[in-house]
Image (cartoon, rainbow, N blue to C red):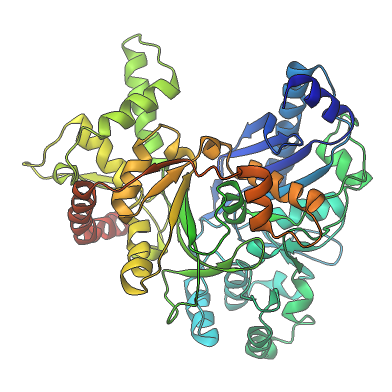
Length: 532
């Protein structure tokens, strides 16, 4: 879209806005009529560990959203000389699942408990056994039942339970709704009817009946919507919350709020059967759209859905690039101590590419990137760790390669279940997120780790904010019976698959050797958690 067309689209309210709350950054992407980003804004933020709970405050959420939107407005002014006053549609997304309970007056009853927490083990285990369906610790129902087990007084007062994306959407529109992909991480979904699983709802209510709560579970959960459905419109109050300057008008239609898993699927065009994607940033997760159900439940595999409601097997790991980023930060500090100034993109690119010079098995070095617990390997807490033997090959190339490899170690554990035990076949895996910003490096490491071709698109860096903007575009512009898969193929990607990288057999063999050490060394990580 050329500049004059973009200016016209901005003036006429034809552009579409997507905003996603990631773990370390809130990002806004404005797209034009061709679904291509035309402006963006962002705001950095960070979670807090308060009383051993990973959380963000309400002030963090609202000040961060307003700063992100203000940055977008400024970017639009600088690029096009226009002030945003109206839009074609808006979509909100957030880091998946977690726990945000409210009473009947809309008062928050407990701190926001994010996906990063691993404090719901007893609840997760009990519900998984009851439902005969894996309930991960980060899911909203696991947090709810754990609060019940803990005897937390606020539970009886709950009248609405939601996630970060659902909370923002509620405040923007007054609608207590949820996109089905994010809903599938609150409570199990029956994909045949695109709503909560009725049998499991009854089981939960029976399990908690003796507590005498005045609510049934379905009454406090949001309404489930699939991609393309109307999810309400921006209210006057919502417009004032988003844009305190008062420039933005109310009445803008909004799509169902989604989690970052669903928006990642949209942003990588991986919503069709036999496709998958890997999102790698603060956390890392792989999504595989299934042809048929898995043979049995696995504690390491979450069953969720696409934004359109199709079943998806998900491997979610709490830790990915946080420790890697910390090491890059240390190298930056070292360079600055010598008076050298270096651009962060250049530093990342140089260090990442250095990893490709390392031994395929990382030269006998071992690292764990566990900032927080990692359920796939059985850790309720994490301790970032680097260890080597006297005869390990300790150089910069292997040091960087082991930290890139360990960022995918837990993911590899779960993916092996899908590919080696369940024989799930995927035509392609698409990579997106910060791990893939340095061209060819994260892509090559991942291809070797999962022994599968990996695609990375030029738009991979746009991430979930672009993905939720695309879901808003689909709601606004789809033809009557046009599926999300067809819409993305016809109006967004146009056959573009991205750069393909085949797995190098030597990389795959080296990663398998690294994983032998990774699994054997978990006892070292356990000792670190126990002793530090």
